[in-house]
Length: 282
Image (cartoon, rainbow, N blue to C red; front, side):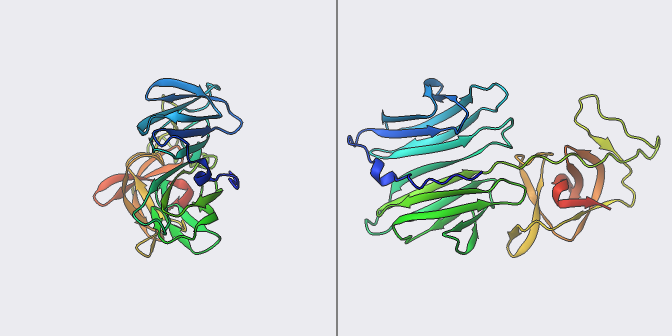
């Protein structure tokens, strides 16, 4: 995903009436219905400049029923325009976009940028400089236009241009879209029958002997506290809760089950799941 907002100039979108707030929704080539706190607002793309400031729940419902809906909280502030760009996919995992919000800070001479990412740990590079990990707040950012790039292995890259304004903090929330999900690892033969049948639910789960089998964590290019790691999830999904971090190069006991490209492992005396994109069965 490559989106360049060279024309996105939030300071120029300050509204005439300080008691009002603005909202802009862009959904690329996919039209969608936009709801605010459950009430229909308008079709996208849209821009409203007469909304009451406050906290709201925005829902984007694509006209194409095969595309996933999206909900997110937003804060509309007096005299400012909040912008949400969204590229819907067939599931939430392969959908992505960016939410731009602004708020005043204590100093009228300084400017700040905060990056929040979903998933967390996204690699941020602003103006092709040093790569840093979100969540991230940059203080004393030079006012004016800046380009940033958000990357993470197995996710679509996002590139955007923002305009930083004196006296304000720009808050950029990035939801990365996952690349096409790779097929599940080949089911292992059953230790009793020599074959594995797909479960009746069609989720391609499999059982295998745990004896002498382990999962080795492959390189991820994701570092936590100086250690290259892979997230361990509570379920076989990139959006499930995190149990912790498995270290790259180490092996973990395989618990005999694969599902949708994920391996089930023993992790810190509990059960967890790691992506088959960054691990291998031994």
